[in-house]
Every structure is written in C-alpha cells, then in structure tokens.
Length: 164
Image (cartoon, rainbow, N blue to C red; front, side, top):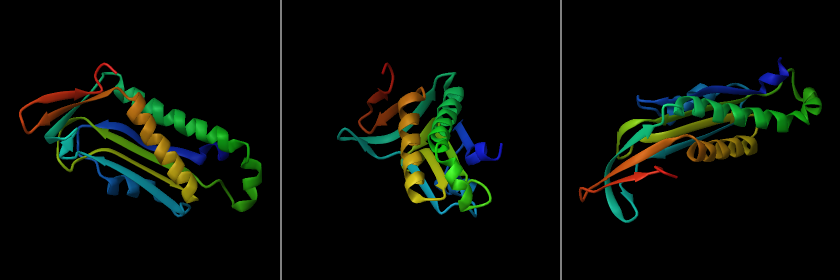
C-alpha cells in the first residue's frame, strides 16, 4: 500500500470553530514537500457595491459527508492520474513523495476578516501543489451544500447559494 499513500487527506471538515491558514500549513508540511500552497477565503467588507457587516454560513445536514467525499474524490482522481507514471518515479527516491491535503469551511457567524474557507496542499513540486489546491477550492465551492447569509450595513440581508 506504500505507493497508494501518495495522496493523503489530512483534514476535510466543516468547523464551527475558527480555522487558520497557519493551522492548515503546519498540518501538511513535511520533509518531502518542496512546495506548500495555501488558500484562505476571508470575509470581506463589501459585496455588489454594498457594505457588509458580517456573514453567517449554514450547511445542509449532509454537508459534512459531502465535504469529506469531495476531497477524497479529488485525491483519488489525482492519484489515478499520477498512477500512469508511478513506475518511472521509483528511481527518484525510496518512496513516493506524498501530496497532503487539508481543507476546512466555517459554519456559523463570521465577522469581517475571518477565514471562511481554508485549504493547503503540500507536494514535492509547486506545479502540482498549485493545481491540486486550485481544484480543491473550486470543487468545495461548487459541490458542498453551504449557504451564505450576508448582513449589510443598510440593514438588508441576502442569501447566497440558496436555490442554486
């Protein structure tokens, strides 16, 4: 199973507790990683020309499992795509260089500047780390059933993601 462990999901959760990019980076760093790429999607103070005061994220009851499944599927697909060249990679070292993946999305009330989505990927090379991290963020945003309620400074409220 040593060669199958080349992709490791370190974390794939929804969290009611604060998350940080430092936490994500620390979790994926290793001596074999030549690159660590991270993403922190933070709550901004505006949207569509209106001032935002805070956000609340709500998740469908299945969202925790969907999050885990989305990340696991990405790791599996990346592993399969990489598998065609595994025979050649054996000469580069004693074991495959693991690609480690960490992802968390907040739920609940967040204020301006709070990280809402944090991802980190470590890999032997930067190209792979960037590609996996970018795809990870896109898939989480597209597939995990999480909705954002925006509270604007003018007192209005808007739901984003509901019904889409």
